[in-house]
Length: 178
Length: 178
DNA sequence: TATTGTTATACTCTATAACTATA
DNA sequence: TATAGTTATAGAGTATAACAATA
Image (cartoon, rainbow over all chains, first blue to last red; front, side):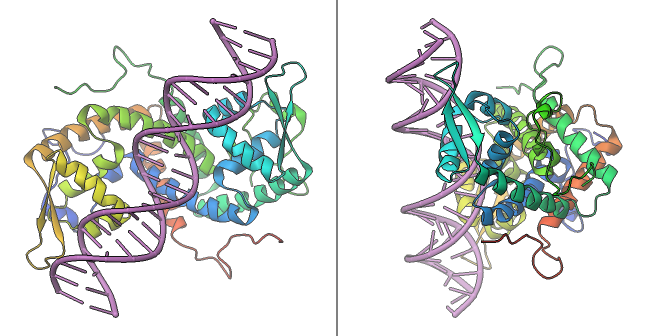
């Protein structure tokens, strides 16, 4: 905690709080709360941006990663994007139905599929890429180049903090009295 | 764009990309992608943190805002947390069923309910608050105080950018050829 | 007529178990 | 037996239309 602490470490909930601090002031201290609201704004904008292309954030991500990793297999793609394999199947069905990607049997392992982007898929992906880049600039308006780089760095650090329960003793989470 | 640009503004998708840049390198340029992954980590951790209290991120947010705004009405609470009214009903049913909040008829407007946190709810909220603060420190490990403040500032700026389609002419979104 | 809370419903994203066909 | 892709299913979270009671 950085702010002034009261005995219990609990925020002051006095009535005059509501005056100039905003009714959700307590939650504004939490990175997750601010991030959820920021991400909601981003997702709404990127989905509106991708809608004319027939894509969503998720389908665009899948398309873009296949585009840059030709011959990729579904299991590996699911790993990369942190998607469960069963959920990826439906996304690929959708993209394949739109003639944007193809599944071809792997020559060495006939259980697996190799994913490729079609010409149509590559063209759409490139156009969508530019629209998403504009979306990014729109959402980052007001941030300087260094601030924007710092944001990316912070987000990646947080992501990696989530994967490392490398605290002392227990995993760092409190165990409340039953 | 900050990096070197090629004629079309499209990222190089040559095969040697996959070497040291990571298979999702293209998406890593997008704030939304990094933020989604960071937020996934945060949400998983905060939900694990709140589980012993019988709360989730969403129910904790509702409880905390009522705690600091006694007498709040559902419509206003929904506005504050950007939740649709119908969805809030179920959350309040849950919190009321746990004896953490109460709905009492507003004296001046008998359509509305005034929301209050019970003693049990206040105690639980305070304990959860401390656990969430520890969760926050866990997720922000590696960030200095200024970096952390800059992160909050950036997130709030992005949120506000989402609410302002104040561009010139069209809303700033590209209209692709049909 | 408008608003508060509610019901019902649907859609997206996510998560898990179990199946098939190959290995 | 183990793995790749699949099916079925269930759970959050979110979004909209329509209703009853009240204003």
